[in-house]
Amino acid sequence: MNYLPVEQVINPAAGTVSLAILIFLSLSGYYYMKLAEKGRTFPVRKIRAFEAIEEAVARSVEMGRPVHYTIGYGSIRTAHAPQYTAGLGVLTHVARLAGKYGARLIVTHGVPEAIASIDEIVRDGYFSEGRPELYNPVDNARYLTDVQFAYASSAQAVIIRENAGANIVIGPFWAESLILAEAGTMVGAFQIGGTARDVQIPFFVLVCDYAFIGEEIFAAGAMASGDIPTLASIRGQDVGKLLSIILIVLGLILLPLGVKLATYLMW
Image 1 (cartoon, rainbow, N blue to C red):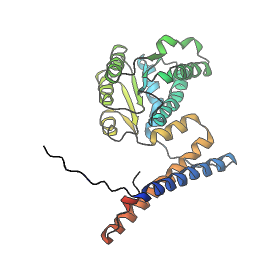
Image 2: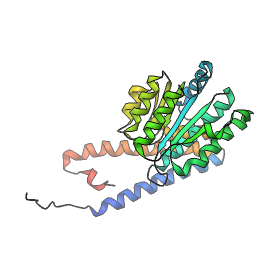
Image 3: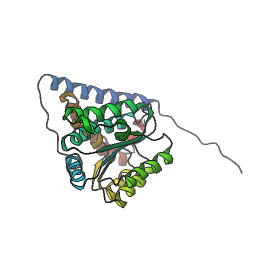
């Protein structure tokens, strides 16, 4: 078999343009965060999936069934770290609601670096609501494994064996996303899913009662924290969206003229 050499053209301007866009977005987020520190407030649109979390916890208590939560598996030292962080942020909100309503919360995951953080978040959730007797570190926070399908099988088993009343899945997910959602469907759990990995979003939209779409998980993490500067950073994300729309429209306009804008914006 003959292999023909493939000419790869590298645009030297691509890296410069990408760096300029990155700097612009970073400064935009910083600008709005500084305004928030000075007392400026920015409205945040409601996210139905975030609002449904309280309903999911309350329903589980009414049925006498636990709430299952997971942020996925893997290492937080990767490019997916922001998604794990967003999952931990939403977990803070879920843990407080579990303490408020007296729900049994079971958190499964396969992220070794997050073991201590998850245990502390769940503990603070119960203690902050005056329900320390409900905290059980062995039962509430369960590290499974960082091997993909071993984690998926273990989490699936927990959902089914514990007969979860709510199944909340937020973080970076791969092929295991549908496995977790199907397990929740089998036991009739109220399901909320979310990920920024676009290839897995359709599965959560299809199977879950509510789903976070893409960067909504980051907004949800900010909303859960209640931190004003962090909430203001969402406005910086909106500036990034607006810039993306402008570049797309500009690219479509220039394309018939023979100018391929995309070649200058290669990441």
